[in-house]
Every structure is written in C-alpha cells, then in structure tokens.
Image (cartoon, rainbow, N blue to C red; front, side, top):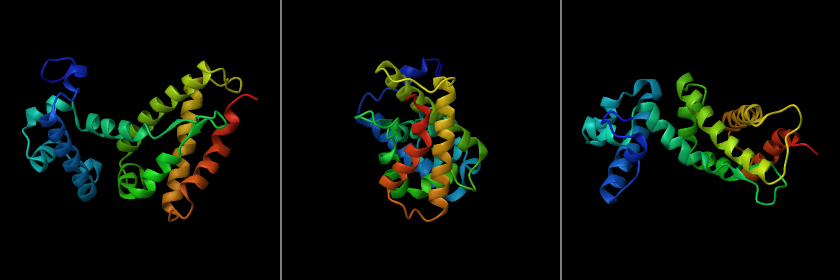
Length: 194
C-alpha cells in the first residue's frame, strides 16, 4: 500500500502527460541532488523542494527515496537481457554502453564513495532482472551447472558484474562495451551446464 492507502501498483501507472512530467521532474531533481550530495545526503524533503512538487505528490508516485532509486535502477536493469542467439547467458553490452555514457550516475550509486544502501539496492534490482533472464533460459531448455540454483546463479552473476563495472570505471573505461561483454561472458558463461 502507498501512503495514500491505494495499492502501490495502481499508484505507479503513468496515466497521462502530467504524471509523466511530474515523474520526470522528480527523477531529474533526484539525480541532481545525488550528484551534489550523494545518496545518504538526500532526503525526500530535498527532492520535493528541488522538483517543485508537494510531498503528497511525491508519495503518489514513490513510497520512499529507496523506492525512487529502485524505479530508476529497474529502468536501467532492462538493459541486461538474454542473448538472442543463446550463445551467452546474458547480453550486458547495452548496460556497459549506458554506464560509459553516464558514468557519474554509476559512481554515485555504486562507486567507491557510494552509500552501502544504494549499492545494496542496485544489487537487489540487478538480481531481480538476472533471475528473470535465467528463468527465460531455463524455460528455453538451458540448465545451470549443478548444484547451482537460479537464485544462487543470479547472485554470483551480479557480484561478477558489479566487480567488472567497478574495475572498468576505476580504470578509466578504456575497454569498449563489447570488450566488457566478452569479459562478462568469461565470468558468467561457465555457470551454464554444457
């Protein structure tokens, strides 16, 4: 339930341009504040002031600052997708391209100076996405190397992806997204059974 008493699912459906415009304003305010203050330094009151919306309006769209971050990260996590040719477990090339194009956002949420809470939210969102992709693979006939379960594999994959992203961003992102995908496949590919 949202703070308005309505089911959260119904609160989050964009119904019209006004709703989209309000969300965009909240999202942009949140990102600007993240850049200036970091995740722990931002409160809902700061977001509503920066976005020029009422507190009740914020809660019509998001249940908390964490919920807002999750929503933004869920949009980004869709860039992680099943490899269409099923040669690789996951195609993270679009995600690597996004991080290359917007490195500041990644550094704020998951970099060295990021808050543990924002990193944990990022990992939870990525694990949700990876679990969905793994389910698609299993339904298509693939199997994981025994004794792995999809839940364990998702955690291992996200841990590996997080480590690769940290290494890449800490070292100037000289490798291309395609090269990063090859490294990622070398890490995640062995999880699939032969």
